[in-house]
Length: 89
Image (cartoon, rainbow, N blue to C red; front, side):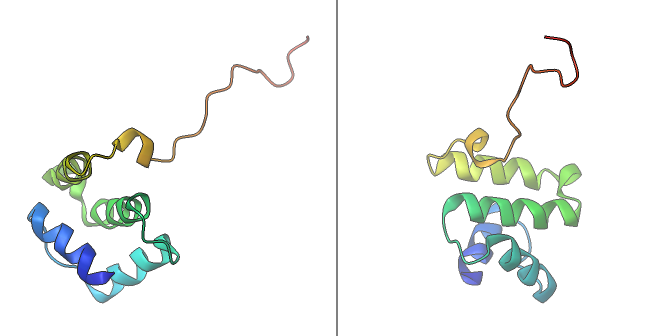
């Protein structure tokens, strides 16, 4: 799996995973090998590297979009609720 993540990073123009980054990615993936797990692991690694400013995160979004995946579905976003706790009914 590490080779696959390194290949994705290589296609993005980023450097390969270090041992510490691989440990972090493996912990995030927790044995899963699907695209969502790969995206979440690489997103965390690139964010820790400071990829927000360098455009690597945008390249990551584009990569998974090119694979036919919707990035909006890959990110874990909390659901919206319009219930106000404590409001009189």
